[in-house]
Image (cartoon, rainbow, N blue to C red; front, top):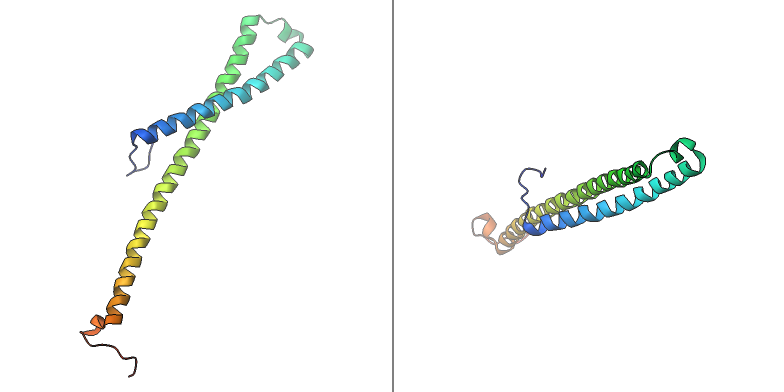
Length: 126
C-alpha cells in the first residue's frame, strides 16, 4: 500500500517487481540450502525422517524454499518501497528549500537595491 499522495508509474512498478523477484530467488536459495542441510541431518540421524517417502521429503524441501522466497521477497519489496518514499520526500524537501532560498535571495536583492524601505537607498549610517 503506497502512502497518500504517492502514485506509481509503470517504471516504478517494473522496478518493484524486479526487486521482489530477486528477493524471492535469493530467499529460496538461502532457505533451500538450510532445508537441504536439515534434510541431510535428518537422513543421517533420524530413523523417522529416513522412513518418510521421497515425495514427502521433496514437499518439505520445496515448502522451505517457498517460505524463504516469500519472506525475502517481502523484505526486499518493503525496503525498496521505503527507499522510494524517502527519495520522494527528499525531493519535496529539496524543492521546498529551493523556494525558501529564492525568497531569501529576493529579499536580500530588494534590501541591496533599496526597494525594501520605500524606495530609499540604505547608506548604513544612521
